[in-house]
Image (cartoon, rainbow, N blue to C red; front, side, top):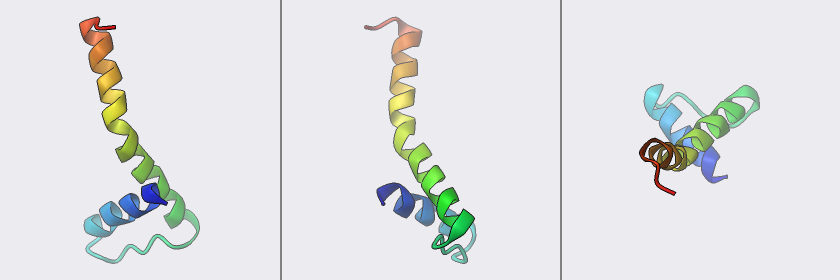
Length: 55
C-alpha cells in the first residue's frame, strides 16, 4: 500500500492532478513507480559499496 500511495503522489504531480491510480493499469503503474522509488536508495548503496570495494 505504501508503494501505491507514493506512486500515486508522483504520478498525480506529473499529470497535474488528473491521475487517480485506482483501477487496472493505473494501479499497476503506481505500484511499480512506488516500488522503484522505495528500492532506489538500497540499490544505490549496494552499487556504491561494489564500486568502492567496501565489504
